[in-house]
Length: 345
Ligand code: SAM
Image (cartoon, rainbow, N blue to C red):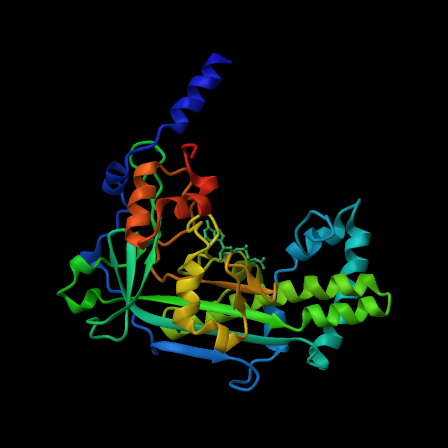
């Protein structure tokens, strides 16, 4: 018991922000050439702008979370062989396929998305985004948080900014780096679901919403692939469906509100840069929720070492530093990041 308590106390002790920064992700920028995308700025994917259709997204669907919505735990397609839940999973899947076919054939839902690539460099734990390749005009800053937990020797205290080449290392134009962003949405699910409810078909009303969520995630996967192609390194990717779902490609697309970037407020910066409200019809509420619900947004990082991690608990020193960088009252940051604070307010 006492040992357990001691272990917990040890676990809880955080590094100071300064100590954590000294343990940033080790990337040797002197031997690295960041890939240059074939376009800069925004590209819109919507029926009136490109040939994007729901049918394009279907092959990118990750079906496993679909079953989780019905509390059926298992991985697709192995779930069908499960002696306890296999039969129910199969029936549900067949019903969903039938409805999906109707939705796709009759365009009952509408995909709208946008992605962009910007010249960018890191400045400490921030990433500055520039108007153009001259990098003289900064158009936005993404503010990131750094892990402060004590780790075994040799392990880094990650921050997403570590994966973008530092501005201080520039002067050599080869170190010009890029950051990507996206917002995608499937419109019409609430309305279609209401129609089913009106016909007393609650079952299809629920399937509609679950399918819209799946299609939105599939859209994020599809657009990430287009981004890797635009970046060059995705052109000769040969990934199976399973590998794609396991995200076995180069780079990541962290989403604000997830463990590597827990502050939902960063969505505001992203939405402004993408002009996402106009370009996709997604509304961002004051508390940074996206409407319609079947929407996904995030950033793209191209570095091969970029990976997902959890920021975890952070100390007051980082909260003060972060609030100063964002020019916000400390209390506002503490409120949004309450689950990450290692102290009580
Ligand atoms: N195939 C899944 C689906 O269809 O539901 C994809 C969604 S799943 C929530 C994985 C996504 O969550 C990642 O692509 C990334 O956007 C986000 N994510 C996962 N772990 C994260 C982390 N530690 N920090 C930030 N974002 C993370």
